[in-house]
Length: 192
Image (cartoon, rainbow, N blue to C red; front, side, top):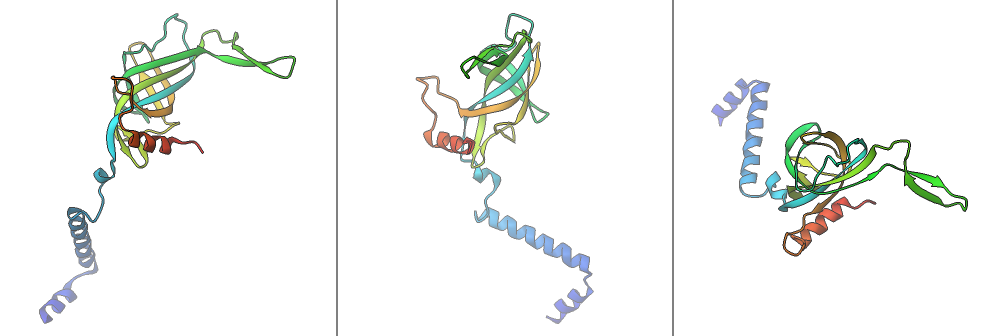
């Protein structure tokens, strides 16, 4: 015991701090090994395919053809970080609209004739995602409504925002992959 006390007195404060840090790291390692501490992989509840709807407002297109085609691949960039090519599973678009008041205090929605080439697009892409308690994680990014993304193809590069995340449907009959996962995703995406 006396040898230990002599050795302890010779230690500097920095040496003591280093020893404490090493002991704490060893304790965390032991707790993780025996399952007493959750790691990030333990928080993943499931892996499944999700449909990510991306909304583009006021896209100027002078061609008669949509730049997006169902079945094509598009390269996605999430938060200015290039990710991967994804398959486009659905495309909806419409001309830019305006609201005009009518005589009887109602309103009428009509095409905006001042911007004849402006369109709003809703493009749905499909990807594999890990479902956590915080929602879907794609490419290491939590995918949430309002997240800015960029889709890029041969003749376009457009910035949009995620407007919806839902589970993909199976090819056979269009049934959901797993109702529990869908409930979790929908609960995380509910707007209050």
